[in-house]
Amino acid sequence: MALVNEHYLKLKAGYLFPEIGRRVKLFAEANPNAKIIRLGIGDVTCPLAPAVIRAFHDAVDEMASEKSFMGYGPEQGYDFLIRTVIEKSYNPLGVDLKTSEVFISDGSKCDTANILDIFALENVVAIGDPVYPVYNDTNVMIGRTGEANEQGYYEGLVYMPCTEDNGFNPEFPEQAVDIIYLCFPNNPTGAVATKEQLKGWVDYALKQNAVIFFDAAYEAFITDPAIPHSIYEIEGAKKCAIEFRSFSKTAGFTGARCALTVVPEELMVNTAAGDPIQLNKLWNRRQSTKFNGVSYPVQKAAAAVYSDEGWSQVRETIDYYMENARIIREGLASAGLTVYGGVNAPYIWLKTPCGITSWSFFDKLLTECNVVGTPGSGFGPSGEGYFRLSAFGNRDSVIEAVERIKNNLR
Ligand code: MLT
Image 1 (cartoon, helix red, strand yellow):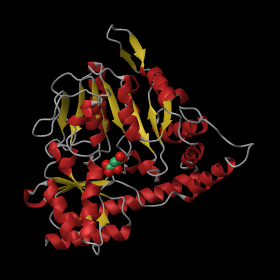
Image 2 (cartoon, helix red, strand yellow; image 1 turned 60 degrees about the horizontal axis):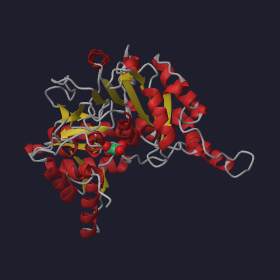
Image 3 (spheres, helix red, strand yellow; image 1 turned 90 degrees about the vertical axis):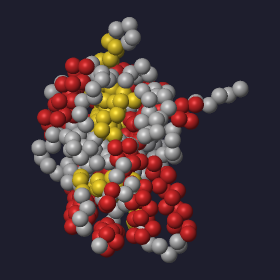
Image 4 (cartoon, helix red, strand yellow; image 1 turned 180 degrees about the horizontal axis):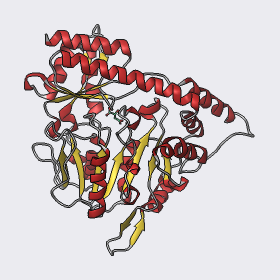
């Protein structure tokens, strides 16, 4: 008889964003005239940049001719894209990478989940609280945890509270851990880490022989030149960190799908017997077996992001979203709300008014303002009493949503 993976049964609610979608759908069906504004899931709304679209079209045309048709590509990604990313995105930061250290994929969500394949279950894992739910749920799915307690913390995971008191920057875990997830600029709080703070984490990981999973999916939204975009800007990081980056939010690829993961060759992890193993080789092995690469037209489109024309168009869109972030942040602050984020990140993290719960605020905004956001408690127990708004909407909707919320709170 086939048996299920019972670790899945430990998961409490549905995945956060489909759950929000389900509730919004019910509301929309019951209120067909409501003009709902969606600032919940961080999904982009601007189209792909013209230079990107052109490269995409050209690559599709290549597929139409026998001479230029492309079949299976390298599982690790095409060299033209890997070289472009290194040259245009890492080298300007003073970071050099080998082409064999960069792996192109179809998303950071999948990569931050799939990377668990190459680590032993015995590793003690630390995640933020609140946190991007994928880090938590995939550790549950793979069997690293026991059940969740009443607060929602899973036995076996180490949670690092990210609170107003610590500026949403977690402190080092009190117990020894082997794997640490860091996400900066942070989803959901919008917090960033300074060079000194990141250096603290790198030094800590090197001392503990721990590995950092550094999710940099939102690095393109950093506006402060002093804030690092990559963990490899910190000395020693190549010996202890894997970095995840994405074209999704940077260049509007949430539907097109393209991302990259950097696994430096210097990064070694031991077997139980104490033999050092290069993680790069294991990830390569894993990807070659379980993944067939991102489609050629998508990789061509992604490379065009870094052409001079593409990058100036992409930057314009990023600036547009960051202006949305400013409108939300300043608008809600003027209505008396306490707001965080939205300066170096496309998310605004606000305190719910009068201490109401995150889900009550969600219901209030949905039913009274017809605005959808994301309840902070959906990102972890320390997110209770907070609420996340995404800056990825179109300008008119963002202005309208802020006005509706301000009027409601008056
Ligand atoms: C979010 O809203 O947190 C993101 O869109 C989720 C994701 O990138 O998978």
